[in-house]
Each structure stands twice: as structure tokens, then as C-alpha cells.
Image 1 (cartoon, one colour):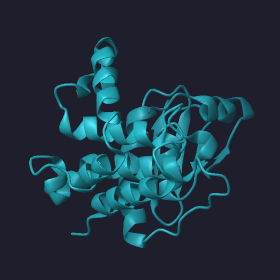
Image 2 (cartoon, helix red, strand yellow):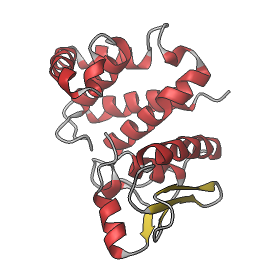
Image 3 (cartoon, helix red, strand yellow):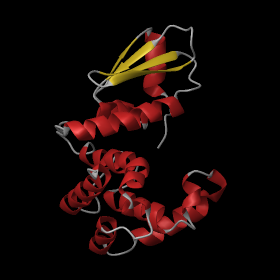
Length: 210
């Protein structure tokens, strides 16, 4: 089984080493150091990670993340490259399920925050794996959307979600671009929207996740 999640992890670590800890990302005001601390907290500090999803616990999560971020940047990168044995990264199928989207999107968060970025030419197998992730993500974040949305990846497939019986919006792009869009990076995703202008503008501005 090809380890796409692990390959994205290593590529992200290499890119962070290249751009340095103070490089910007697409994650709000987070630098590469902040994003790295987030990834390590998510993987190594399960006792403090609940605040990523539960707002009332966010304070502790933020404190622990700042503590992690204060560490030596090179040592933190070494930890990212070599996850703990008990983490999902140790089991290829589970790693792909849990970490592929996380590593791909955050890799692109660093890449696309730099001026002059261009899309990567992705391995066909990676594109297929990303389409699986994008399909699931669309069904999750758009299942209650007030209009019908057709998410279309030419050559891969289509998933229809949102409210049936309404004027549909077509969201079209390569699987990686769709995944970026569906993780709330609409302005930085090279995906097209087609439909009633009011509906497309609403989807372009929607909060679709971190």
C-alpha cells in the first residue's frame, strides 16, 4: 500500500525546514512554527487535543500548543517526521484515513502562503486517494447545505449533497483542489463554481472547517 499520508508528512516537514519557523501559512495568523506545534499536539498530546474540536476546552489546547511551539524548531520537525509508534501513522490504512487530508491540506497551507505558488502535478494514485477524502468531506460539511451541491472531479466522479430539489451549484476541480475548497480554503483553491450567482457567492464564503 502506497503511504501517501506519510509522504505528505515528510514533504511538509522538508518544506517547513526550507521556509523556516516564521513563514506564513493559510491558517490565519499561524506561522510554520505554530502549525507544526498544532500537528504535534494533535498527534502526541491527546490529553490536550480535545480543544481543537470543543470550544470550551480550547484554552488548554492553546496553552499546550504554545508550550510545544517554544521548543527547538529542528527538534520539532524531527518529531513530525517520526511519529510515535502508538499513533495511527504506524498503521498504513489508518494513517491514510486519519492523516492524509490533514497532511495534504497543511502542506498546501505552507506552499500556497508563498507568493508565486503553482499547483503540484500529483501522482494519479494520490489524486484518487484525495478524491476519496474529498467525497467524504463533501458529504460531511455540505450535507445540510441549503442548496444542492454537485462536487465534480473530472475523471474521478461526482458526489451530490446538500438540499435536494433546489437549483444546484456545481463545484468542479481536481481532487486536491476540491479538498482544499472543502477545508475552507476557497480563495486559494483552483476550483470553479457554476450556478445562481447568489448561491455560488454564498458557497465561496461559507465556513467549511479548519
